[in-house]
Structures are given as structure tokens and as C-alpha cells.
Figure 1: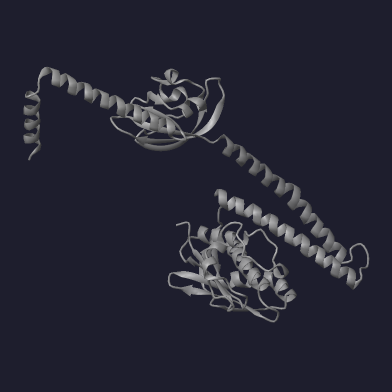
Figure 2 (figure 1 turned 90 degrees about the vertical axis):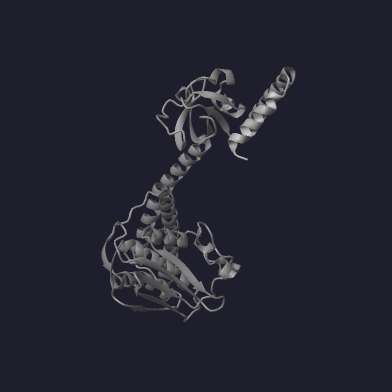
Length: 369
């Protein structure tokens, strides 16, 4: 049956009703509408966020109890007011669908940060969900203060301490015995570890916040690998691990310092987990449309179910107490972030008991294009 025919049939049905029956039907429909409206209001009151319902003119038509509590107003005080009554700096935000941050004004004049999520509802009405982010802002301020403290109050003294230990070891103040020099070397290693942990923490926070830019310039696979091997040679000798390389000298555009950092981190991990007299091999060259680097070791390997997890922030593999390596679990996270900044990919191919191949590939084209 067509819509027109249905409407005609409905009208004929209503024509057959008496005036009393029509009044009773209207009363039932009205009661239904009132019941639905109350049910909608109960649902809005139960939402665990502040909710404002606004019309197309940005006037508030409803506020739930949590919104009233956040803003310090009663519903009757907010009804009919425009959004900028409580969010003066919200501007001409798009009511159809918008997420924005703003400062909210409480009735007592206090200002506090909020995030506002606006979604279309019905009949020209829109939901504005309000989330108080004061605690998030407070924690962010604490984080920034902590990083400033780490950068200034820890890194600078540690660098001075390392320089002082080096000068003593080199006999700048007095002759030192071989045994004393060995002890100084252990102290230098401990300071180096602390400096490395601090640098990892600061770099990971910069990468997490997005406040990190690459310095893209022409370079080559050979330059990156040679610098990485030179930086890793001392650790390899101390661990009695042999370093090898197999490099095709290909040109690429990249942040050379950052890729050296990635390769040094991967090589350092490979050395730490390699058995004495083992070998760590670095390979590099063009593969497809990108340049691939690999660090191949003879260590214990990484279980398949953890091969993605190890690149997460603060994630470390469970290790026996006697072979546990010190760290914050940031090295591989930083490697992953730096490679992805180059629009590349990083992964590990490994089998328990058969070593690992940590690989990353970046496109040959300038990543800024």
C-alpha cells in the first residue's frame, strides 16, 4: 500500500471515531510524549559527563545534574542562555559535529579547562558533552616540572661528574694505579648508564608530545653504519662480542644523527644479549623503494607473542635476575618513534634460542615531501 493510501485509510479510521474517543486518543499520545521526554531526561541525567542540550541558535535548552555541578548553576539559570555564557572563548564552533577545548566559567567566577564534544541530536538540537580536564592539566604541569628538573638537576651534574672521572683516570691530578683506573672505569660506566637513562626519558617525552623535528639531509648507509659501529665498538669489546657489517653504500635523505641513534640502540641491545665470543652483524642497503637496516645477533631470541610488545613504552622482557639488564624500557620505543618519524617501519624477526634480526626500513624519498 502506498503512503498516500495509508494516510487516507488512517484519516477514514479517525473519521469513524467519536469526539470522546479522539480526545482519549490525544490524551494517550500526549502522555506518551511526556513519558518519552521524561525517559530522555533520565538518560541524560545518568550520563557520567556534563551534558547540555542546545538548539540551532546555541541556546541551552537542558542541562543535566553533572553539568550543573561543574558550572555551579541550576538548570533554570542555564536554560535559554547562549553557550558563550559559560564558554566565553568558544567562538563560532560548528554545532553539527565538533570537539574543542575551552575555558569554562563557573557561577562564582572561577575558570577551569574543559573539553567539549558536540554531536547532532534531533529536531535542530545538539548534545554538548563537557569533560573537566583540570586534573589532566595539573598532571601535565607536574610532568613538565619533572622533566625540567631531570634535564637541569640531573643531566648537567652527571655530565660534570663524568668529565671529572675521565680527568682523574687520565692522570690530570695525580698518578693512578691500574686497579684504581679499573674502578674509575666502572664508575664512569655507571655515570654513562645514568646519563643514557635520563636522555632516553627526555627523548621519549619529546617524541610522545610531538615536540620533535627531524633534520633531513643527504647521507648514506655507509656513513650511518660506520658511525654506529664506532660508537658500539667499546661495548662490544667489553662484552667480548665481534662486530661485523655488510653494507651497500646507497644514498638517502634522512636525519643521520637520529638513524645512528636507532642503530646504536639496536646494536647495543644485540651486544648485551649476545653470548661471549658471539657475533653481531649490521647490514644495510636498498630494498624495493626503501633502505633497510638489520642488526643480527646470536642472543636468546624474542618469543613471537612479545615481538610487537617490546616496542611499547616502558616495556621490557622478563629476564632471569642474574642476567637482567638495567633500563627503563624506552630504547626500542625511541627507535620505533624515530623510524616512524622517517615514515618507515621497524620490526623483529626472531625465534627463541636462535637469535634475533631487528630490522627497520625507511623510504628513499625525502620524508618532508
